[in-house]
Length: 89
View 1 (tube, rainbow, N blue to C red):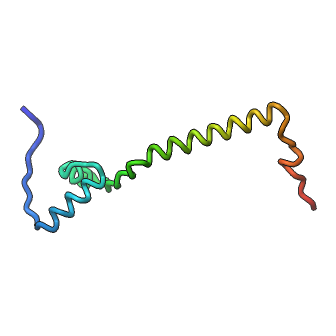
View 2 (tube, rainbow, N blue to C red):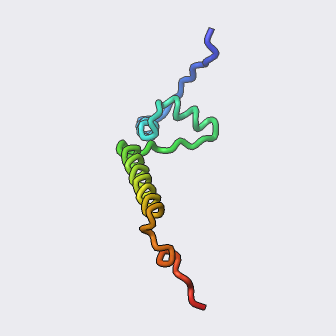
């Protein structure tokens, strides 16, 4: 026998639409959204669809820049004196 209990609730049409909209924005079902609220967790909206693709591209760009900096340093193309200029007192 299942340990889950069913709970019915009445609400206005406006509240129902608001619950549906908020749950959808978070990528949750209505019951999942309410469960998170009960556990004192404020559900956050899911990021836009292209968020993870952009994040991956930024990581790749950062990795490429790191490889370029490593090679420039390893081959002596970086002038340390110009990179770390002395400060005048």
